[in-house]
Amino acid sequence: MKEWIHTVIRDHICTITIQNPPMNILTKEVRQAFVPLMEELKQRDDVRVIILRGEGERAFCAGADLNEEGELTQETVRLFLQEDCRIYDIVNEMPQPVIAAIDGYAFGGGFELALASDFRILTDRAALCAAGVKVGLVVSTTRLVRLLGEAYAKEVILTGRTISAEEAFQRGLANQIVPPDQLMTASEEWAKLIAARAPIAVRKAKQAIQRTMDLTWTEGMAMELDAFIECQATRDHHHAIESFFKKQQPSFIGK
Image 1 (cartoon, rainbow, N blue to C red):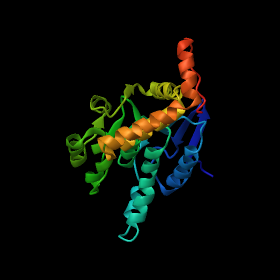
Image 2 (image 1 turned 90 degrees about the horizontal axis):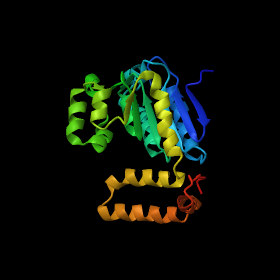
Image 3 (image 1 turned 120 degrees about the horizontal axis):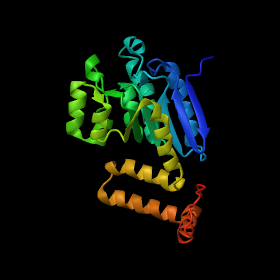
């Protein structure tokens, strides 16, 4: 039986590989394997960071299966979209930070998957595209506007043009560009840096950052202060303070 999604967990980091080469498209089988896995990882305190990648060198992910889309009717399209969007939504809602390690194409749904991630590490040959208008569809309007603003979202989405790795970095869409053979090393370095921090604080900070755009200033500040108060009571915070005065590196346990 084919393994559509492969996972490796080591040192609090879970590396997930979409195994549907060469383009790693999000078929029904991939969706059915991916979503339950992410639901399981939500509950795991031993996983502090997730790295998401595609198998092979040609594509991180080239989006949905056009054969599946071609068979849709007005009666079935909404259900398909709900299943498809669940992949991106669950990445966005993960309590752990998600790092997209992107080599090759991230088109259509692959672009959306990248936008849903918290960090994006690209190889210098990576190429991103919100390809919706090229095939008569609307995609990525919500996430791209929230990440980079209305003007740039219009430029990218309404033209359907391809974004190079360099442009993605200049625009703040990519956190780092590396040669292809350094992609996983760089992604793991980011993951190790995050995993070394207090995990409760990391999760609560991610949640506060993501929710603040939907809140008023007063509501956002109240949430931030509530998170501070909750973290202040943790063992990890008190241990970090003790370690600071002892000039030692703290070791966080998520309690």
